[in-house]
Image (cartoon, rainbow, N blue to C red; front, side, top):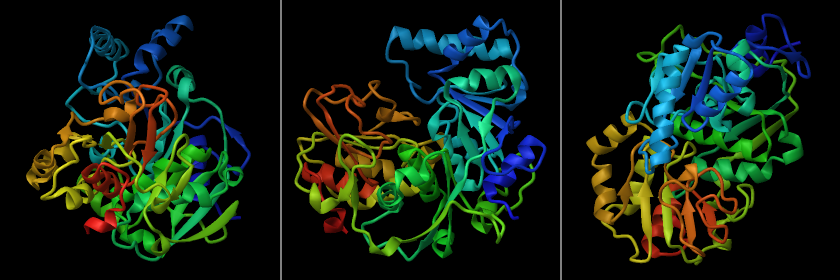
Length: 418
């Protein structure tokens, strides 16, 4: 019987053939953790009596949730992180201003390649699926991975999504991704890997693939992965820190389900409060007043995303009632955005830009809401309190929809500006 991409990656990592339902202890190719949890795993290891970690050369730490320390407590945490990575001999440390978002820049820097297994603290490590890498979140069990080199997981089934058609003007991969959180039943996706393929995948860039792989976590998926192709190999050719090869599911692989999705049938989609899967067509929420807008997060921080926003904002001004924040994903993305004049477009419109990283999506650090205010943004979550006050309302949408809404001061269909 053939294997899925996930089964192939986990078979290699486990050192034996595996199938769905097997309990295994896979050896990861890379282990990642962000700045907000480093102190916690250090405490957990100390409590366990562990003074050394397994394979420190495979560990990557990034300062992305709070790259600019906005309090004494944040400065103290950053200082502690720098001391911890030195003590454990972790050389792959990307401090503030050195990399950017930890779910994005490791792809740019060649750490992440097709066929790899990455175990991480943070749930949105699934972004790495954009290049055919299996990213699995271990959350607090990352301490066990650091101490022992692995931790147990159960081999998940795979739900295959074949993408067809072309996007209509005014829609983007965020609209596709959000619609899929509704069209894919949560009980089907639960503890499964969502694998993307189909004829339309070849036309989707790395930014769009990251968006697709980011969102299934919100309906219970274990991970997400896009079938790598020549486009991915071409992007990684001069970046990869190891050999490159394509990986695909076998023709006779067993999928939990196979779904065909037509991208050309969509209008812009919006996730209304209080859940990321509470998705409706934009016509259902158009006219809702907003005071806050944000473009960034690991779901939509690519150069393609910034270009989409700039298409709408160019030559226009934000509503006086709206403050807008732009957070590029990485130092490289920010540099390219400056070179293309995108940052000037944002500045001319009245938007603010921040240090590359998570931006407001990290929750309660920068760019928070005031009591009773409403935000539309490209973040990953819209639960109560995500951006500060629990009575704040958060709508999630594409960069084009966010930009159009920021101009008008209410949720607006971006097709009116294109």
